[in-house]
Amino acid sequence: MSAHPVFADMPVTVFETMSGLARRHGAINLGQGFPDAPGPEVLRRLAAEAVLNGSNQYPPSRGDPVLREAVVEHYSRLQGVDLSFDGVVVTSGATEAIAAALLAHVRPGDEVVIFEPAYDAYRPLIERAGGVVRAVTLQASAWRLTEAALEAAVGPRTRMVLVNNPLNPAARVFDAEEIAALARICIRHDLIVVRDEVWEHVVFDGRMHRTLLAAPGMADRVVKIGSAGKMFGLTGWKVGFACGSPDLIAPLAKAHQFLTFSTPPNLQTAVAAGLAWPVDWFDQMRSDLGRSRDRLAAALTAEGYVVTPGEGTYFLCLDLAASGLELDDTSFCRRIVEAFGVAAIPLSAFEHDPVTRTVARLCFAKSDAVLDEASERLGRARRALL
Ligand code: GLN
Image (cartoon, rainbow, N blue to C red; front, top):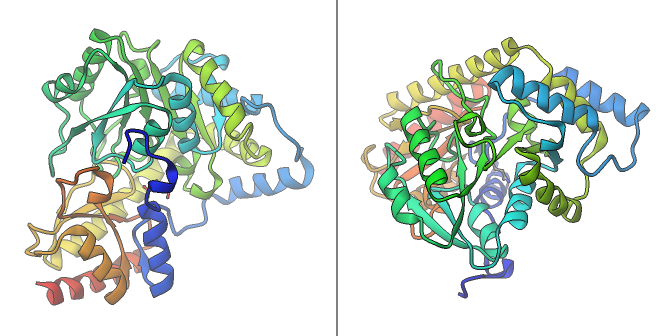
């Protein structure tokens, strides 16, 4: 394959593949990350009302001004960042924001550092933008980012670091030391950081998300990406935001105008209202999800699995080898969806040359009954596969 493969050479995403298998086998879908609840009724009513009585024509390409103001207010109140109105662009989901950031800021031959396991869209998008991927492997199950490994990946052609924190699929939240190391290297080598922070509100055990935008010396080099889908459990809405200094955001807005141009106006109206909600609402959402994480982890531990604790995101990971299973993660995920009625995601799908071959990711943003049934089925699977 050439250094810049075309999309025709690339696989169907693991999410579409596993959700397709889940549908075909009538399995409980703990693969692709989405809640089984419909999302806040207030926001759904606002969106419906806006379709009936609001505008259904193109909103401004950079986003409904009301939503852009709401993003500025939200991040100022909850994360202490001082964004300007011109530092916010609304996109059709975070994935579009990532694509626009890469198209805007990567020139052919530029190197982009990512951390593997990495979200599966990163590598193909970097390569189609003409970039060259430099991957830093994070080792299971600590998934720690070290300054030495990052420094080794940076060279004279490095332009950007694309990093997800909290980290999907490993469910890590980088700590202050790791973030400080990342910031030091970006400043030392004059790099741009595209920070995919879509899981910013989904962090557990008293953790607080700190945006890299607020780190000393980083305000002019970070593009922060957020997602209403993850904030409000409305993943199908595909409303995202890219934020940062107007100088970094202006080129991104130009890429966005040729990708989707704009995002459905009614969804923007509803998301603006949600962003203004008090911090209590976000605390409650975290605590409900934390309870679901604990319920699934406890049930699977009782079934003999070794579970890696999730610090953030909708996910927890099963360490198959430590659970006494000898299959690789892809075979395990195939077997459990076909024969035991549970879909999961193999972590090896997030690495180019997989080193993490025995970890599977499960989504716990589901009702207690669904989690209990899935745990029982996974228990049966483990006993059969031992
Ligand atoms: N972010 C979701 C996940 O990690 C997948 C989104 C998608 O399928 N495009 O499961």
